[in-house]
Image (cartoon, rainbow, N blue to C red; front, side):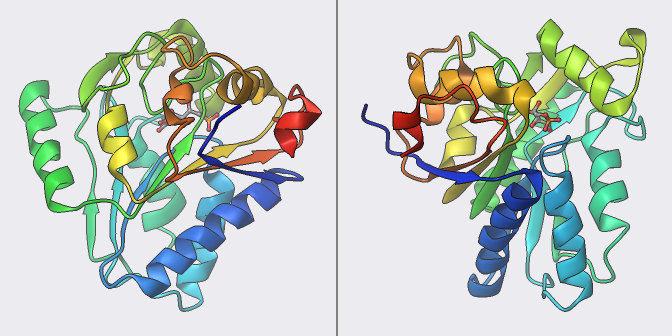
Length: 249
Ligand code: F6R
């Protein structure tokens, strides 16, 4: 099977987080003005813990530009928003701040205007790194099954499985859970010099099997990354548990 993206197989969540951190730390230490675009949710929590430790122990982010690839539609301070996650898990915990912080405004009345504003941010700041998590249905950002592989930043509707994952992750009821998100499309995601996909846990094993061994198809959005040589997938043992031995070589 021809696949150009790089796969790194690790033991567990901790090792996945450490590998991700090593890559980002190297970019921060070597680029003149590093531009890092993050994701939120369970997958990057450990990576954020390491980044906080790093920054508070001298990793210099004074020239680093930070942003995120998506934001839920809802009140900015709701428990599930990317905004809340980023402040609780990173910006409020570090003792020096990045050069710039960009976030999508999920409570903007005019979504089209907000999308256009963020497009300008994306044009002004080409990303060195884009960190991603994998949906149980194979989604990337909020590019759900069926999204064309040439998508650009748009207002996306969540699949049921995504709404359920949000409820689980943030311990909220269905009527509180967001159903839409503004998300970067595959086009802007893949523009990053390095794309890091973090995958851990049994819950993700089906999606990982489709990602690495299934058909390249919009049915599994992550397969859009398969033939891209700027993509690094870091997969732990539980997430890799359904893979053929051949795939892990
Ligand atoms: C969240 C996002 C989503 C998650 C994905 C995996 O900002 O972009 O695509 O990365 O749903 O979520 P976790 O990591 O919570 O399993």
